[in-house]
Length: 140
Image (cartoon, rainbow, N blue to C red; front, side, top):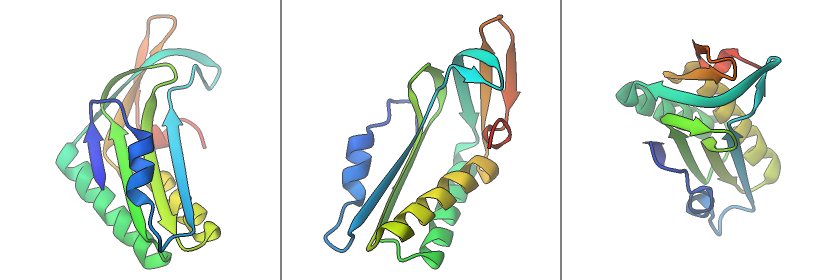
């Protein structure tokens, strides 16, 4: 399941969607809006993207993960729009027969998503200024 949404991400449903009797491991990654970024105070984030291209790229990433690990199921959801502190901006759930593969596949998916998928965020700083950044460039 690949989803771009302006609604709150139901991470419990996302997790359940990848559970399987064939998988002994389920890994869930949640990216949330944090208050401090590189020493600056964030009050909110705005996410925008190119949905058709983003969905195509996410589908490619899923295929790449499946080619490298014995993935049973994958679900990825990314929010678009304005998000407040603490809200979930992205969720990646992966199931595999064993935990190492599930962790490795999950890390690959979130790391590559942040670098290659056309979704950008605008930092809304506490001093009233804003800055558009590609999400993969702000922190490791």
